[in-house]
Figure 1 (cartoon, chains in turn brown, yellow, purple, cyan):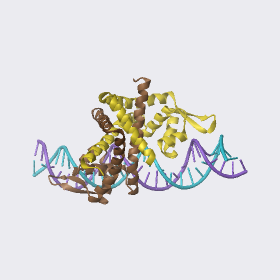
Figure 2 (figure 1 turned 120 degrees about the vertical axis):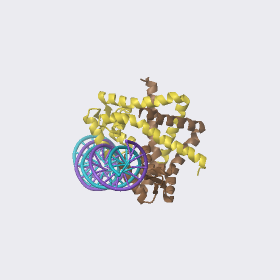
Figure 3 (figure 1 turned 180 degrees about the horizontal axis):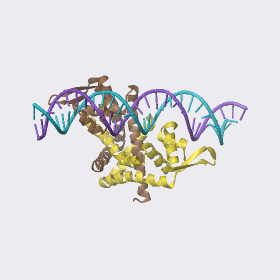
Figure 4 (figure 1 turned 90 degrees about the horizontal axis):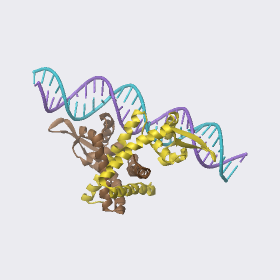
Length: 148
Length: 148
DNA sequence: TTTTTAGGTCAAACATATTGACACTTTAAT
DNA sequence: ATTAAAGTGTCAATATGTTTGACCTAAAAA
């Protein structure tokens, strides 16, 4: 248990995480809206861009969603020619995904607004705060992997 | 535009925010699951707990959802006797919300796991990092209010 | 008296996600 | 060679969350 003061501090942290995350995602969501896409599509574009030739299986594990949940958005992105696929020559069961030129352009736009957003804040708070912030965020993610 | 190095740093930040937030919400989600509740219910419990006697209207503005989206979860919480309501004596149109004893207990459990999670990470990264992290998160949230 | 505000509700529509079941292809194991 | 396992795809049923639009009451403000 925490004393009242500490509890207040931690609740402030919870709220800033909630409101910060919400604000962070809102900008990209608006661009996605104009393309008739959702946040899942962005996540796929992002991680396929970050990990060219990622397999469907690896993408599922990374996003922690069911293959049924991924299927529709991915099919859509393939149909829109934002993502391309080819069979892995060393294991022809595996489908490798990568961004097309158009897909890379959209991804750069979406992620660009988020990089701008972060960079603006980091510029105000300074490089030390940037490092500390990353350490805390990574800690949150890692602390899960044990209990998750 | 950012140079490649900076872009890598900012993408790391984006990913740690995504994975950190996901890990952060996962624990409470599991508890909610056992009660047949969702994340919206938690948000309502949280903010009603933080702002006793908040009106439905103010809650809508805080959560930025439509009244239709709030209606069902809130009705549910009232029916489960986790949230109570009474008319504002100074304006009888307004319905004031507050947690019941049972509601407060569940809210404390849900938010407790999140406070534990945060406190564990802050304990590892230190008080300076905690302050810096909060400053960045608040910056993210505020930067939206202008452009939002 | 009329208009505005706070709240509630019904309906249609769409997006997101789940689990279960089944099929196909390819690789690995026996 | 046969069988088992892995990677992918798809259909169905179900549940949830969310939106917009429309319509309603009650109370307060103009």
